[in-house]
Length: 356
Ligand code: NAD
View 1 (cartoon, helix red, strand yellow):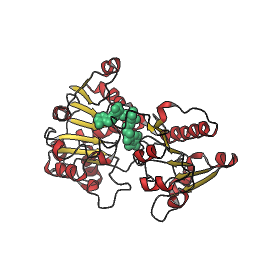
View 2 (cartoon, rainbow, N blue to C red; view 1 turned 90 degrees about the vertical axis):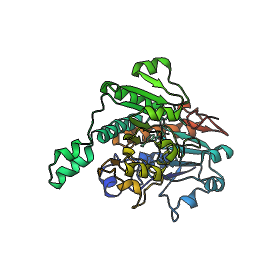
View 3 (spheres, protein in one colour; view 1 turned 45 degrees about the vertical axis):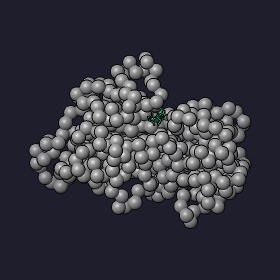
């Protein structure tokens, strides 16, 4: 069986650090196991000149990661006559045309839960670094300067603020759990799937049904829902008008949920005090992507990093082992863990990728 693995080149770091499993060099730790079973493992980087286009034609299994994704478009799904299973090494399968997968009876599985703590920690860190104006303070000391007032004029405590999450699934809920001890004024969430009452009570989170109403109440908004037809461009110029002036926005879900230019304009005008996250509308982000350098009127408010929150070494160990379990089930015709199945044969099996 041909198993095609689309990863990214980890270079020197991946040669020196074998725990960088999600790289071409280390192949999720699957190479010798798969070859020992007699399967063909083809690794390839995504891109127009890559082998991806060539090998997808007769691959039966495709493994990709969201961090440096191999985009499986409808066009490629149609060419992939032998494709039966796509596995996302991580969480978030929007780089695969899921509707095309449904139409062509290709299953899509991800390793649910594998990096949700990793991302939730990153969200809390990002909220803190924006609210406390950390990045310009650190840049100041590196430059050799010391002007406390320049930083303190835009530094706040998280205590007493209203924080809300768009999406209160595995990550969103873990963010709320981690924020509870900060004594925020209120924790809110917006999601069409309500939290079980006991879970909402544990974190003290209140559901708001209208998105404009929700953002207008929040000092900090964090985005933790998948990218699908209902969330692409959800945070656009119109919605941003309803944000509190000076609010902070953190998006570690998917870049395209927030409108690139509308966010940059809101930061430039100071309507948003800051934006942070690790996900971009195109990955890798072009060198001149406005989110790399956008700043608020005080020259701060940017907490952007490359897509890595969910690919800590701890997370890589979990998603590599999750990919292996999915493959083991597939090879031996055993049922998959239902929580990992995004698209089953001919239909969505999850409620998280939009209301259908
Ligand atoms: P999950 O399925 O547990 O939760 C997603 C939640 O979003 C669900 O409760 C769902 O009902 C809700 N939702 C869907 N559409 C919505 C909408 N229109 N409005 C409000 N809520 C909506 O998923 P998760 O494990 O919490 O992961 C969420 C997303 O985070 C992933 O799909 C992925 O895109 C992203 N993610 C990013 C990284 C990273 O490294 N940056 C890592 C893992 C996951």
